[in-house]
Length: 145
Figure 1 (cartoon, helix red, strand yellow):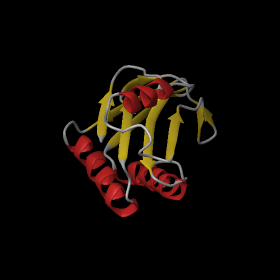
Figure 2 (cartoon, rainbow, N blue to C red):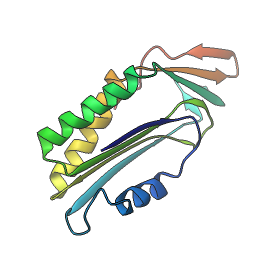
Figure 3 (cartoon, one colour):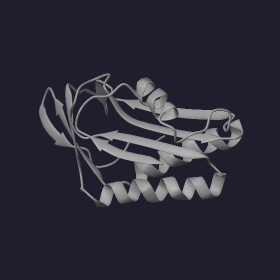
Figure 4 (cartoon, helix red, strand yellow):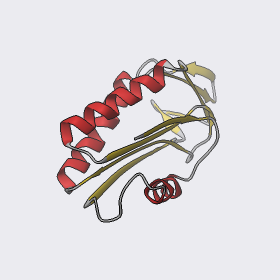
């Protein structure tokens, strides 16, 4: 399992490949890999958004992500989990979050990936500030799934 919060951009597809090749997953041990990549939109609540700044509660947020990954591993029998999340200044089309689940069968990987993402959006401690044409605003709640 790998949980990481980064302030620098990353290529989600490269990260998946590198993780699979790092030795944590034995080749042939998994039959499914489900991945979700969340990217920044250039709009929210009917307004253009040019930049978003993401902040987190260091230490606590990582622990929250680790807990939800461990729960998903236990509930779905996952072989492994990878979660990467950006913080700092983010531009439209930049990847923000990567959630990956590996399992023996596709149903567990699909279901676990979706559940982890929904829990991350509703439970993990992140704060978002958007830059819009009318100034800055703190986002009070996440968009619905």
